[in-house]
Image (cartoon, rainbow, N blue to C red; front, side, top):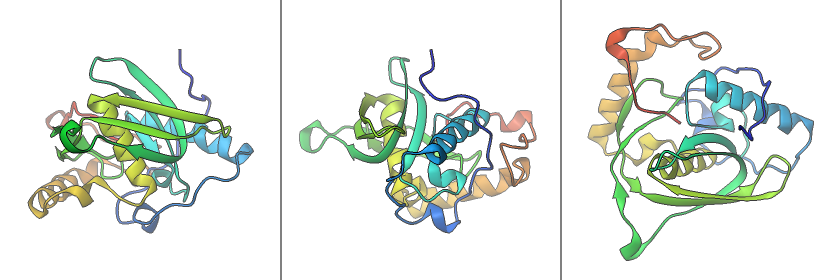
Length: 201
């Protein structure tokens, strides 16, 4: 059963290059009705885009907040809402890197390898101000790191070498005509040759 809010409205996803995507966002301090609406809309937008996570700046809102619904390495789905997230990853001899594929709903359709620690823990508060903590491995670890990065104005392209970044932008440019400017409010244009199994956040 979903613990995420329902009945939100789908919003257009903000793309890389917009200022709100590339600066540290504002901490959440007001947990009133506007935040509850935003969270529900973010969940609806994440689901419409078939993503596993979405940060507030990805719908153009300057707040340190993300929602997620993502499987861990064993296929167990974990979902939640995190405001003002702080991420912890293993250091030293405990640090192992996962060089899996990564994508971003704000650069739709494009994926490339991005090395990240294979375990992560995120702490913060939920949309009601109640403390929360989530941790996991596999795709979940990648998701928690990726979304926390967004709240700090970092996109995963910032973590790539110049070669991989160039390749990623080239793929995104090729696929751009498939994604309307208000996607996922308007659905993408389906092409069999562009079918992509990877999950974006």
